[in-house]
Length: 75
Image (tube, rainbow, N blue to C red; front, side, top):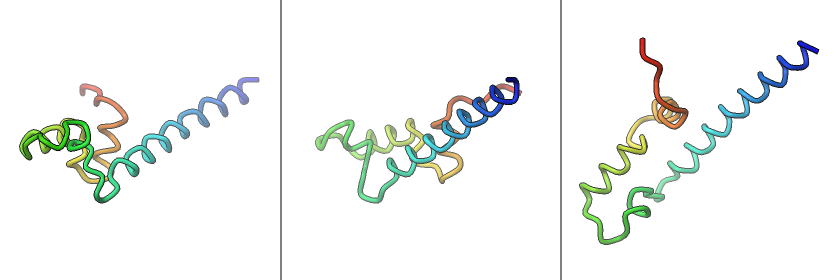
């Protein structure tokens, strides 16, 4: 029974990682400017850049996935 529970927890954790990675990939499709879509066409470029930075879309792959996964634990 304990083995079954451990496998289910591991599968759930793996599923969360895969979903967060796929979310990042879909948000980073070239030409899909999420900040521009959220703020509208009349927003200035500085506001769009700030929105993209707040969403973590200005980072490379692993950094952005960590940002999407949640806040870092304090050391």
